[in-house]
Image (cartoon, rainbow, N blue to C red; front, side, top):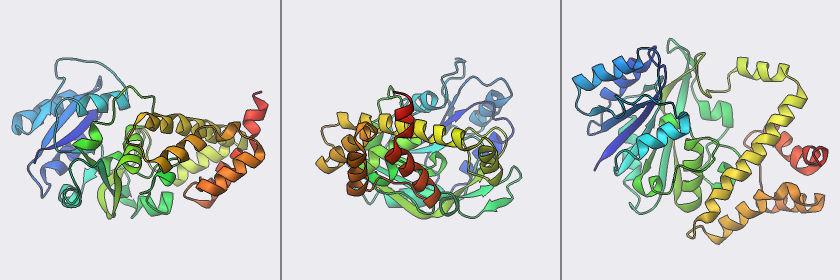
Length: 313
């Protein structure tokens, strides 16, 4: 069994060593850590090179090539560097709990290798100094973990740092799709064409700091959004609805997509172009929704009123 850990770094000198140390401390030890740097200007590359010298399982795949591809393209470049049976996504600034890999692999091997499978865990949200801010990111941010396509279609609960997937799923992502985020798209592929599995225990300490690309929905971030006002919030939601429609449409190219999944995606992809009765009937039939009541309200309000589409006519 070959297991690759995929890491993309960018100016991660503050926390990178601590993340790699947590990988070295895993109870499962038969892994390869492939690291691609996305054009760092700090000492990130020096830290990577130092760990490579200490452990042959760690490889710096673009040591002599400095190029900034962006988060999604950089992760895809690491993924396609070398084939494996199982892949773990890894961020540069978190800390993996010791049995994270073993727990995920124990679940993954229960399923046929030709079935696209993704396994993910919960996270403990911590501050820069690893003080716990929240014991469960899933419960505080999403209320529940998604495992079905209809859930993952409109809202992602999979965080890359606690996600792993098999080669059957890896082969489905071509890398040229215009997607929202790679962990979300892989979860969509798994829920539509294979199996998306959640393990209800934390797999890592998810560090919150000023340079997070996305990060947890902390109280401070929520207040910042609220201060921008309703118009900003609704505009942001409407853009996200359209982005999720576009992202989901990529699944329609797969001939193996089940009939009910294809119908669900097709009816979501142009729901905003239907009459009021058409939009309402589709929401009721397919249960398009979100994971928290406040998000459900905004999401369905925008779809039913179609207010932003009407304004843009």
